[in-house]
Image (cartoon, rainbow, N blue to C red):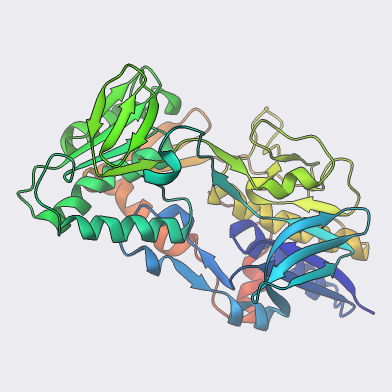
Length: 400
């Protein structure tokens, strides 16, 4: 009977874990191990692009890729991990309860935005966290054109001035004018609890965010937090009310709740502590990749961020190492010392930085060209060709 490597999740971490495990088995000519991917869909959803229009196109099919790589796909949503019994329970495509055994497990179920327990957020706020949520927002934006012209109709409020919030907000003026008309008096407001624009990005990158905001007409409400959301807008903690039909929540990401079912230490974002091979500390048979892993990228105190940049490399290493450890081959410790940021800033362009201190290397059109290359080519999975796909899963390939 074949030994079983089970990967939960078909995001960046999961896809590259499965491909890298297949590569390691192929290198050692092992036919006695089966790799399975358990996920709701056999598609990689390109989450970094969910702030863009035409979100229904932001996915890549995986069935053919998995087939040529010898990976079994199982459609279902995992909801229980029995660590002692080494099984995972899930609801299949028909909603029926099933379970799968494993010899080694890779948890790659990603992260999700945390909606706070504030009045009206669940009922009235949109987000771009999942393809379905982003599609709801897109449908809502299209429907605005059928509403009478008003301040509320023409105003979008983005809650949170972090990476997702900025990329979403800077895209909105162009999207709104495309739907409401070039002469529409649109407003895009970012509500940010920090004291200055882009404070979390550091002194190098924040000037570009300021310039883009001014050029695009973005308004920032700094030092402010949301107290409530209703059908007509947002109430801030100081009592101000902003009229808006479109409130987008982008604050507070946390690792998949499945991490809580695995005994082990977690960081404040819920990510599991892993060793240099990405094995969960204290768990001999479980690895973590992508947003579920709290992994050191170097020996300088830097840790992987919740980003596809890190998830791809984490997946390649986790898959390689889970297969190598199972068959007795040499593992390859995870290291990803190079860190880059490429922040989309709408029609203004983008800003590209290198290093954890975010040294600016490109801005505006040059950075925008790079961002488009990243978003439309680099982060997509390989074609369904076995040789090319397994070669692309080599953990020694730099991701930056």
